[in-house]
Structures are given as structure tokens and as C-alpha cells.
Length: 347
Ligand code: HPA
Ligand code: ZN
Image 1: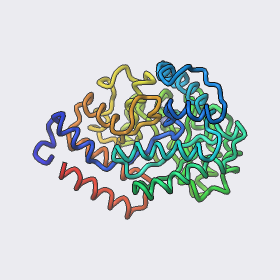
Image 2 (image 1 turned 180 degrees about the horizontal axis):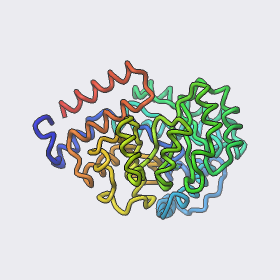
Image 3 (image 1 turned 120 degrees about the horizontal axis):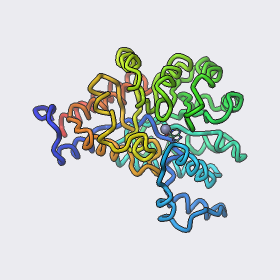
Image 4 (image 1 turned 90 degrees about the vertical axis):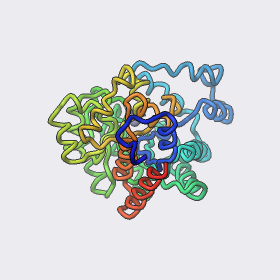
């Protein structure tokens, strides 16, 4: 790729490079990897009646106009996840798909409150994920971590109780996050629970600036101690914030196909990805809820590279950004960065 680095990529060279790059996924809701086929098979297993006649009818229902219209279906879909084997099967299917896309490390979000409210113990949820993470490491060499997300449409008291309930599983968690409906649920609402999580040595991330204003990004950084911002694409509305993101090298975990499906952008050409990347913001590419948004991580790299006319050097930069922005130990990061560079040089 060396002498073509600055030019827009030809189709075959882009495909070769995207396939070859070792990828790190930092914004992936594991419940958002529930494919309709698995939804139907688990519904059959547990005798759950789905409001859809077929897999095709489920897919046809995935036409969203905003974040909430997606969340309504996403939470309803979770109802088929009931026992430890279900959570295992869900996560292992993700790892198998991610491995095919060249993912070597993944930091998975999960929404415990969606399951505990249905009477499913945390041990079942986390135990099933942990079994799959161990298997994914054995089978595919993929390393992974879990990030416990608080649902921001619920109260901070509920989040505090969830953190307390997760204490026996502290060793299974790398950090905490904040997701669900953003509008009207500012990061400020969760200051105490994030302070407590950080005091426990958990890392902090938060969704902000997807549908919510740029001010939520600033709040997530200053009030929650977030080390990465999930989405963050509305940072552009505050030039001083963009400057800060560049100066402090704060990573954004961008999910372009999600932004398209949830109408955060009208088309991928209108996305601010290349603009922010060229401005020096530390951007990464991720899949968010791939079963609902029509693409896994390589699809997101591909669609973004095409629509935004990314160069080879920019794609490599994005892959390197993700390795640096991960919660991997320093030695693993260095090894991964070397792998990315040599894979890019060979592609
Ligand atoms: N945004 C907020 N909450 C979510 C998302 C998202 O994209 N996916 C799953 N929960
Ligand atoms: Zn998300």
C-alpha cells in the first residue's frame, strides 16, 4: 500500500486491506447481535410467542426513524434470552462472525438491567458471556472484555443497585458504560454511579452525542470521567469541544451504519467521519448492533471507506486508533500495533 497511500483506493485494494487489517471492536452491544434466525430458534426453545410470522418479517420490521424506534424492538428481542446457554450461544455467534471479519479483540457492552428485570440472575448472563469469551479465545485467539452498561432511561438508584449486584462479578468486568435513550437523560444524572465504579477500578465510557447535544459529550468527560465517547458525532456542533478531543486525544467509537439506520445522518456521504478524522480526532469504526443495522465491522469499514473516500493510510490509522483506544495492557497494544502495520504493508 506504500506508494498508493495518499490516493483514493481502488475497489480490490480496499477490499484486500480491509480484510487484512487486524480489527478491534470497541462499540458492540452483544444483545444487538441477536440475528432473527436465533431469535426464532430461542423463541421456539422457550415457548415465547413472537409478534412476527417469519425471519423475513422480523427483518422487514427493522426500518427505524430514530434511536427509540430501534430500542423498542431491541429490548423486545431480548425476551428470548433466558438461560446461560442462550447468552453463550449469542456471544459465540458474534465471535464466530467477528473472527471472519478479522476481529482480534472486542470490548462488549451488555445491558444487565434488561435481563434482571425479567428475573434472570446476573450469574446466568455474565456466566454465559464468560463461557463464550473463553471459547472464542481458545478457538479463534480473540481476546475480549465486558463493559456493563447502565440504561440511562432508568434512575441512578437503579444503576447503583445494578452496580452493587455486579460486585461479585467485578473480575469479569473491565468497565462501565451508559446507553439507551439519550435525549432527556444527560450524563449528569449518573455522576454518583460512575464515581463509585471508577473507585472500584472500572474504566468508564459513555454514549453521548449520538442524538443528544455536544454538551452531553462534555458532561460525559467532565462529570463521568469517560475515557472514550461512544458515537460522539455531534461534537462538531461545538468547535471548542472538537479542539479538546484532538488535544486530549479522546477516542470516539463511531458506528456509521448505525448512524445511517437511525437517521443520525441522511446518507453516509453526509457523515462527518472523514472531516473529523482529517481534523485529528481519534476515530474508530464499529458495528453497534449489527443484527439490526445491516452490517458487521468489516461492512462498516467498507461502507465508510467508499462513501467517505478514505485512503489506505486513513484506514490503517482507524485500525491503529482502535488498538490504542482499547483497554488492552500496554504490551498487548504494542504487539497489536505491530501486527496492524505489518498486515497493512503486506496487503
Ligand atoms: N445507542 C444507545 N443505546 C443503545 C444503542 C445505541 O446505539 N444500541 C443499544 N443500546
Ligand atoms: Zn451503542
